[in-house]
Image (cartoon, rainbow, N blue to C red; front, side, top):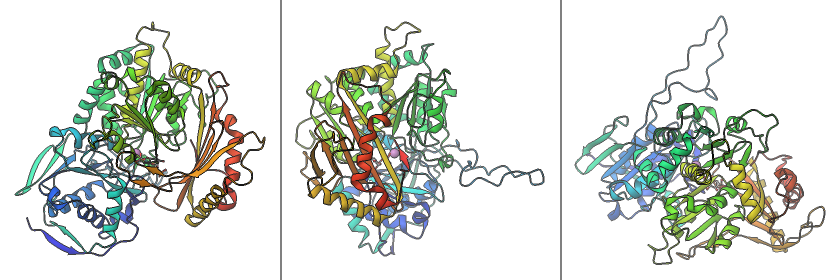
Length: 615
Ligand code: VG1
Ligand code: CO
């Protein structure tokens, strides 16, 4: 194998965000953009540890993944990696989908040719499956993984591509490492690689020895992960629920990598009928859609479940499925729906915590020992933790902050496992892997339903809605919503944040109590996190206005976009047990939303009257 050194120069802006580096696909395709970043990853890892190691390289299969995998294999070979594992793709994607790349419409004189057949997708592994393969395959020998995904961002030649590095624990690189990678990109001078290596056949399972001491093995993308879920959940109990004549479900893979896992686990192992598994053929451009499982982008599923785009029950009495779920492009996110009922992600993690005994992985270890949520996630989980006497952690946005808590015992501190955590952005998971896990959340909810219905006669199914309402009755309800302003001018977004920072410095400033004057500000601050396990500090993680009744307004800028800035505003109001839990969310939050918009002067800074997305 000939290893050569190719000169290169630093490329500006290769700074990983909340979850890796995300840019337009064409940016990644140009010159040595991908090569530079991958070399910088290797330059940030100890050469002695890389020597002969096993590395996972895969992702959600989005446009350009096949080419990127081949490039990364050649750079891995040049940097001493001994073996690369790549998830096998498949010929699910039959035809170029509609959406941005659709062909011209047919007319009588111009019968449009059928859209071109697509090559099979390559390098498929969902984000939680990468984590699982790193941790468990061959007893957990893998050293790390390179995950090719921009997650819920759209894909295709005109959309987004992404890359991130995961460590030996299976979790996203912590900030110390992503900072080192970024620093390496700014002083990079060369790429060390083996460009003359032949391309590997990514479509056939099995190992190929490419050179002495260097091989690539194409692995089944579903097997390791499905086996791991089988150890976490009681599959026979879930199968019995699925088989009930009075229980129907609808699952939406959103044309992302979730599809093969949904088919394999829900279909193959739990007996869900094929017709219930929708959009389960992964496509390189996600069918032209935004593969983000929320009320706005999963609109077909939302309508099928009898819901409006604001998450309220739609008028009309048509029969709807009892349970609905969707996942994002890389299958780490989840949305949970009941018939005519939307479960907010913040409620979802709280309900799972309250029903942890329905999940053998938790129950067999004596119950939860720790729970956590990201700072902007509603405080519903806090109430369950307090009632159960389980420690609760509030971390910055991004899954990488949960990893240290899950690995606390290995790092010489207290053991918080079994551990459950979640984010308001449709992310939920546990210490079975070190990523959020969409299908895990689906099975967690099926487990709760299975337990609640174990003795229920056919025809009297205990519904998702009944379970959530019982939860509110006991713990109170955290009305919650998030406003996103996408594609805002970056300078305007920074000016808005500076304005809020000045308010915080002034103890909140004028106009903090809402139109009725009912809201009493308890404190305003900028969230800073000190990791309890390794002591690292992450500052400037969001501006918060916290009220005496538990209401909160939080502002932060997204770290996952690829152009401009996205402002996120998180609004939460607590209604105690015994209060009114039946209001539409928009009505319950109206005054607080108005307050949030005026505190930040959003229209003045951004020119936007309305948010792009409300979830
Ligand atoms: C968003 C979410 C955050 C999530 C991250 C990655 O980040 O808010 O909770 O962890 O996406 O999710 P940001 O910085 O845009 O707010 V995924 O499924 O895109 O990897
Ligand atoms: Co994702």
